[in-house]
Image (tube, rainbow, N blue to C red; front, side):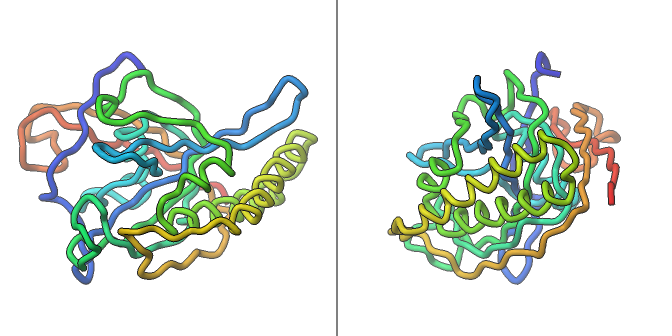
Length: 253
């Protein structure tokens, strides 16, 4: 798969809206790493924003021919070049204003976003937006301090709560104990970081709410489907090559 060339979806002819808000879906990609002393730590992946000096979690428009989960997986692939296992229940949903769409936070450009946790299983060398985005693996404290917007920090906090709960649920081996400790340490770091100012000059949170923890895991086997025949294009519109997700779902209770 890493040798294939992909094309990202473009345009907004299939974009979902609700109450004049653009619906977006994204994820916090993560991995557990082990150092030379066999200690585990957790890292999250962020990507650069085109034409802006900041880092964000992969996210983008939720389109009308896909689920929120499929949209989150697609955006992770397009923006960050990663594939993984996506947890089914959103970390939460947030309303915010898009910096890229409107200055001074006018209500035009309002978004409602759903965020998920994704355990990365594959990192691609080539991905659709690699010319416009860099990607960086960061420790939790680094990511928290680099989150420009309050809703991103809230999503990161929710991510750590979900991780801690699910690891406790799955605790069976010494490795799980080490992973739980890594997440617990990361949560403590975030609590310490909360003393740092979380204000931003141009963009602010309108509303945020975190969902309750779910132990349902959805496993997405991402397929890359390229087609030039309109009959094969689930999105309609252009006959150009396009990218979409072929998703195989295995729900584990």
